[in-house]
Each structure stands twice: as C-alpha cells, then as structure tokens.
Amino acid sequence: MTSGEGDPRLDLLVLGSGVAGLSAAVRAAARPGVRVGVLTKGDLDQATTRWAQGGVAAVLSTDEDSTDLHLADTLAAGAGLCDVDAVRVMVDEGPARVHELIALGAVFDRDQKGALELAREGGHSWPRVLHAGGAATGVEIERALVEAVHATAAAVMQGWFALDLIVESDRCRGVVAIDTGGRPCEVRASHVLLATGGSGQLFSVTTNPEESTGDGLAMALRAGVAVADVEFVQFHPTALHHPSAPRPLLSEALRGHGAVVRDAEGRRFVDELVTRDELSRAITTSMAEQGVDHLWLDVTGLERFDQRFPTIAATVRGVGLDPTTDWLPIAPAAHYLCGGVVTDLDGASSMAGLWACGEVACTGVHGANRLASNSLLEGMVFAPRVVEAIAAGRDAPAPTGAMRAVLAGGDGDDVAVRGRLVPEGESSGNGGPRPRSVQELREALQRCMTIGAGVMRTAESLTQARDGLPPMHEHGVGGAGSDDRQSAEVRNLLAVAHAVVAGGLARTESRGCHWRADHPEADPALRVRLVTRR
Image 1 (cartoon, one colour):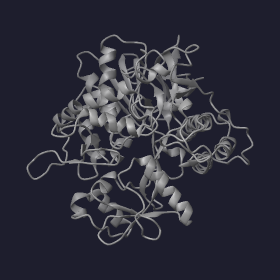
Image 2 (cartoon, rainbow, N blue to C red; image 1 turned 90 degrees about the horizontal axis):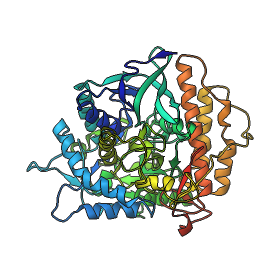
Image 3 (cartoon, rainbow, N blue to C red; image 1 turned 135 degrees about the horizontal axis):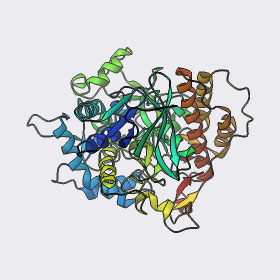
C-alpha cells in the first residue's frame, strides 16, 4: 500500500466536494500554513450540491421576517427532535454565510430593482428562500465554491475513492483510499472531515445521483462512530414521474409560486405549502386509494415559466411535456437523509480527529424532518465552524447540540438524556437467491428498501426488508480496479440500509418523515435520538 498525495503533511483532509466540504476547504486553505486536501470520488464540480434546486433559506430581510420565525418554522418541521441550540446557530449565522458566498461570486436571482428575490417554500411562514437561475441554485453555489477552491493551495484528489477510516489509538488518522489508477493507498491527516453527502441510492426511485451511496456514513458505522436519526429518510413529494435516473426534481419553488397538486381525477386535495413529509404522505395515500403510480403537478397557471424556471422547463420539455399546457406527472422519491454522524455544535464526532458536516452529519438541525432549503444553509454554516474549532485546538467532542444524546448523562457513553442506543440490525440471511453480480446486488438492495422502508412503513415491511438484505459480511472489497469501487459502494449501501431499517423498527411511532402505518401517532416516550454505535 502506497502513501497518498500530500501524505502525511495534511492538516485537514476533506472527504467530499459539495457545499459543506468546499466551504470548509476554502475557509481552511485561507489560513496561512494550513495544508488542506480535498478527496472526491467524482469530479470536483459533480457533487450532489449541483442537483439542489430549492434554494438557500436565510433571513436577509428584517421588515417582517426574523431569525426567530425561521427557527420556529424549522422546529415545527422537525417534529420535536431538532436541537434548539443547533437551529439557533444555523439561523443566526446563516445570513453572514450567504453574503460571504455572494462575495465569492455566487449570483442569486434579483428583482427589477436589483434586490435579492426571496420566495416562500413549504413549511416556511415567510418568503426567505434565495434561488439562482430559478431552480439552478445548487449549480451556481457549486460553481462559485469550485472556483474558490481552485484559487487556494488545497491539494485536490479527484476520482479517488475513500474505503475506510484509519483509526489508531482511538483517533482518526486519515483514510485508506483507491487512487485514480485503482491502487489502494493511505491518505493521512491530522483531522478528517466527512462531507460525503447522502444515501439516496438506497432506493430504486431517488433524486440523488448514483454517487450518493452513503460512503462517509458507512465508514463511520464500521469504525464505531456514533450515528443517529437515520430512520428519517425524507422523500421529495414532487419528483417527475419518469424513467430518468435520478428522478428530476420539480422544485419546491414551483409550489411556492402557485403550482397545484392534483389527484388522478384532477382534484386539488392538499395544501401545497405543507412540509415535505406531510405532502409526501398525502400523495402516497392518494395514489394508494386511487390505484395509480403517480399524480399531477399543475404549473399551467405560472406566468413566464420558461424564463423563471429554465432548468425545469428544459427538463420537462426534454421528455415531451409542455409546462404551459400539460400537467406534470409526479410521485415521491427518496431525497435526503435527515440523520447521520452525530456531531456537536462545532462538527466534532464521537471520535477524536473526525469531524462531519452537511448531509452526512446529524447536527440536530433537521430533527425528524428537514425544512425545505435548510440543507445548503446547514452546510454553509457548520463547515466554517469545523475549521474554526480545529484552529482553536479542539480535538474531542463537547456535550453540545446533537452530541448531548451521546455524551450527556445516561448509563455510559452510548445512552444519554435524549439518546437511546439501537444495535445495528442484521439480516437473517433468508432473503432468497443471492444476486450474481455487484450491479444485481445493488438493484436487489434498492428494491428491498423501496418496498419495505419507503414512505409508508410497518413492522412487517421493515422486517421483510431486514431479512431480505444480504448480510453485510458477505460482500467485502475485492482486488484493484473499477469492480473494487463498485463492490465498496454496495458494501456501504448495505451498512447504511441495515442501520436505517434497525432505526425504523425501533421507532414504533410516526414522527416527521418516518411514517409507521401500524403506529400512526407520535409517542412522547420516543422523543429521543436513536443512536447506532458498534
């Protein structure tokens, strides 16, 4: 095994190149003498961030909106599981992070007078969401950050794949990775930041690109790092019902501007500006009652559609639909994992030297359900906090934010006042014939999770999903080459799938985006974080 580029001189190794990872890299590289590396398995500008259409939620007008209102909306969406301190940090620091992004060159939509144009989205009490190019916000943010990273002295390792964390004396010392030539090597650093995004590829129908295989979360699980809230998988209610993979998003912004959801008979049956979990449940229920596989989004009443939403217009016209006359077919699709690696308010995980931010992290901001357009903001806020904490000499987690569920009180490290330990689930091994290839295994896993752990869940469906998943130990990483990476991605998906199903079985209630049809009400006794930790 060889040593990686820059090894061992890296002060900070960032895994991932989305808004969270690049925000941290830019901030860290600006510090004199700090050696920063960014390792990403794709191209620097191909992270999940570029798929984000909704926008960035931040209070930039003080006329009638306020950070208190943004906080209240976030807490309401999170269904009792948000950490109030973490949400306060996000809403208070968010506006400054947006202005910093604008200073880096990000261009957001403005009105005819040149003022930033703010829209309202589902769950928000006031228009506070910025967009770029109507529904190309992620692309614009990614562009600005990629340019900023290239302007720094950061070492960029594109096309590298991180396999596992290097842990020595209970501290993270770097990662074992596969380089662009397929060779395994070590990339060592004083600190490692997980910013690897989500796990949307757990499901057959998802808005996430095929790179979203839960890599950072799986590495953390294998290393014994505390993970929580992973049963809360948010489904986007208005993904375009089309064979495309990933499913194109019909952005929240459309409903914010007046688009109408209609059932199979053309009737409007729901408030389009409820939170995503409520709308996904309403659509799923209506589809089941009417025996159809999709409903409709009526955007025909929106003026200047092609000019205001050019990206969406190009997408729907590309599949033969005219948004000015046609209703658009929609169905929920897996979109965002609300939980992840448990962190404190500065992004520190339960393992020294390991940090996390963005979708891979459980900061406590989202609770049981993410409020629309808070995800980009969360990455922009907490990534700089990681860098500042490292610069201040922090090395271990503090009992703040979501980390209180791991460190504070209880019967030891694993159980806290607001935390409950959930052992990782394991398959019974009775899932039927084993797929013959890595791709067949991936597709079988996705079907299993879609059927058993989708929008609507029961104890029976979750148990079938658990028993249908192949045991994790059966599929390791083989030799060098492309198959090595593919099998590693499936291994990661299996690890995350078992954790999601275990959490879903343990949470015998309906809360946020976790809907148990056999337990339709919230249980006050389960207003806790379910922590998975080996």
